[in-house]
Image (cartoon, rainbow over all chains, first blue to last red; front, side, top):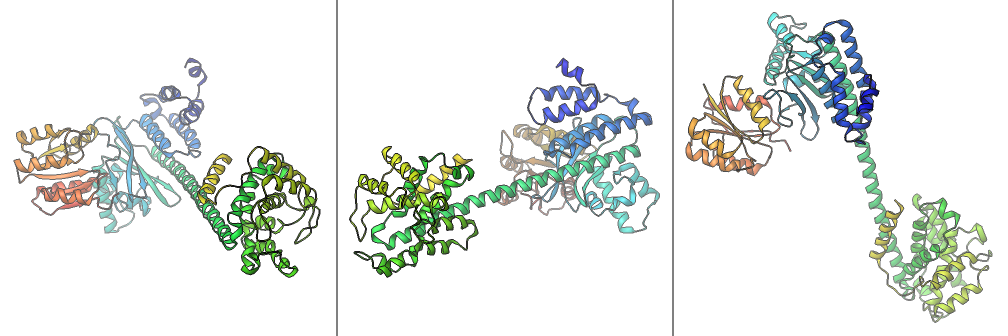
Length: 475
Length: 131
């Protein structure tokens, strides 16, 4: 505590301590320290300060320094309290109150107040309607007619009403001012200061009489108005940040929802394709599981590192890789025995049909490409484009192996199913020809670890849960 | 002098309203509990009572019922932070003169108090649109 005391020889240090430590709450004890320091730096009576011109400049500087930092504020409540405190202690008033506009209640609500017993208006107890005399006077900017600073002081208002010294001879304005006077008396307000941001009245600051019994000086009223407008700017900034944050959160939630919707749609589509083909029931789901087991064994592939969504894209590609079979007639899809050349040609169209189905969706352009190439061969003998090696996207190479493994281990119209060891042997024979040897190695490793399991049902819930867990881990 | 009783378990509110009505030439009594309120009502017979509905020791509605049992003519203004149509209707049925939702407008409060003392019998409901 002592070293901080010694270090804080000017307002700026107090200010930075207050703003950095107290408000960021890094050091809970600092709030007491800063309060003490603040009190020390604001002369308790301040008579000397309040008299001479030099003193006013001094006091202005202090407040302006504080106000400069205020613009950076994210929590306007702290700022409002601080302004209230500064004015209270610098000027010495019987009581003070801050009313801020609340959109939900469509009212100016009292959010902070100070003062002696009975003088202090309880927080949350009092509000002003937007149509109330004081608020209307400010929001219609009619305060400009009666005060240079924009702040309304009771004494000046009374003088105007009694002496008939009005800039306008408008009787209704005169009546409005009478109502303002009445309302200020109800609030026991000696001075009402508007907080404007651009043309919007965000709040008002209410001050009681000075304890010294003296009048408010013109300089003080100007200063309070400036301070109040700075505060309004900080409030507006904070609101803006708040609403931006809300938007960001909304978009985030929207994305989550849309993503879930998309995954469910993908599952539904994959199920629809599976359902048409009596022999391939659960194929898409199994291929997806195999792909994810394989990629676990390929931890060092650069594509995965470069793209954070790699596994998610792999998953979606695996789910949808046969989506193009929607365009293939049942008679061919469910034909028993070997397909003839013409029929084969039609079946071989399915990667292109699948890619075309997804092509109109810009978010899925990559996946569309992977689906297109999942029947390419590593040596270039595949279809539709005859790509080879690295020309084939790695996701397509993985899906190709997983697809073949499931095809071999499942009953097909033209072939009886084989056991997984036999299937692995067959796939290994084609490593470097049809399949990427690295992917084949990964499949073998995954199989040896027991991670390739062709039992299991198509379970959308499990997939959703996996996606949730996966996204969480990614965050 | 008109006697007014303030019933609110928040001491800040009592202090503020006490000063507020004293400056406006009322003889002011305040109570921070239901029992205290009942004592003052029997002893001092206030002309008008401002009654908080949510109190720690007693339900404001119960106090309202007791007040009306002692003096059916007593004027009671319910001041509450609960803006609830059913509660409002209940207060009206029990014979309250007005129902004001906090945060309140001091002008509304004065209007209710003065017009009730002036013999007006319309039921007031201020702050209806507050949530």
